[in-house]
Image 1 (tube, rainbow, N blue to C red):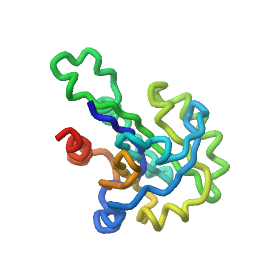
Image 2: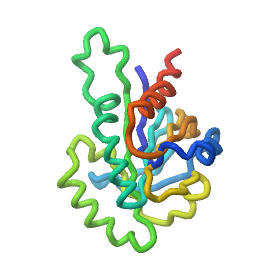
Image 3: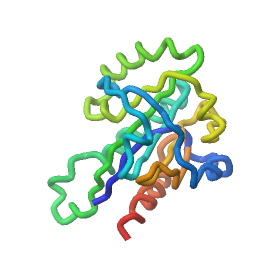
Length: 185
């Protein structure tokens, strides 16, 4: 069974910039889940593969949300009744990370309350709210387009093994799943 933690960042296509990040350890990111639990990534995810999604604008947050249902269905839903397919189920922890930076920091509290009301309760422990500076992540992770979410697959040691950006597509999900499936071979 796969051991995966999904950290949702934001942006799925900036190939040249994002591929430059592959092989590097994901920088420390501290945030609070919608449930109020403080986590430090990638340390909290050590020992498991991780999908991390980051969004740092209203437009990128909307694209990030397009991943919620497919990621939940593919990696997080209860597979206990999967029968013959139970061996293909993933053990996945997922984190979608809305980033509140600059003048938007004051919006974090109201956004968290709205999220608790509007987002399915099953996802609350997988939404990590970051309030702080963007600079440490912008250059190291190649966060060039504020209107797209960025996604990173991390290995069990927190090293970036795959990157993508943008709204959900089946092709992008297949690429993520291919990376995660390689661990089984």
